[in-house]
Length: 95
Image 1 (tube, one colour):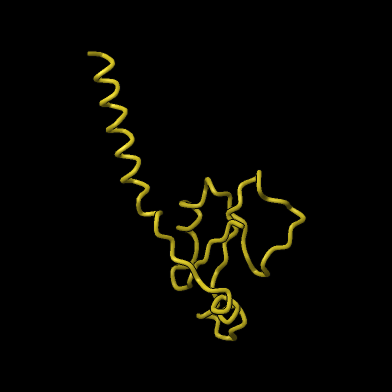
Image 2: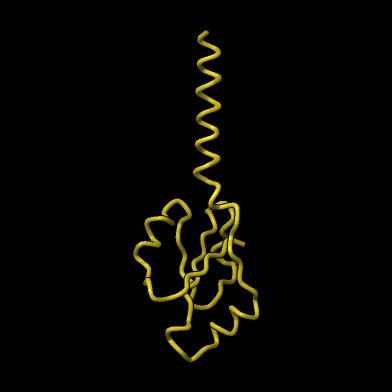
C-alpha cells in the first residue's frame, strides 16, 4: 500500500512538472536577418535588448559576444527580466 501511494504521488508530481513547463515547448524564434536589421536600426524604440543566459559551464569569458548584449545568470533570469524595460523587445540567447 505504501509503494502504491508513493508511486501515485510520484506520477502526480511528474504530471504537475509537465504541465508547469509545457509553456516552454514552443519557443518563438527570430531570423538572423530580422535581428540584424533591428540592431542596425537608428530608431531607439526598435533596438532590442539581447540577453546572454549561458550557464557558467558553457560560458567562456573570452568568447565573442553580440555588441550591446547583457549577461544574466540563468538561475536569476526570471528576476532579472522584471528589471528590464517593458517597452523594448527582449531576445534571449544561449548558444
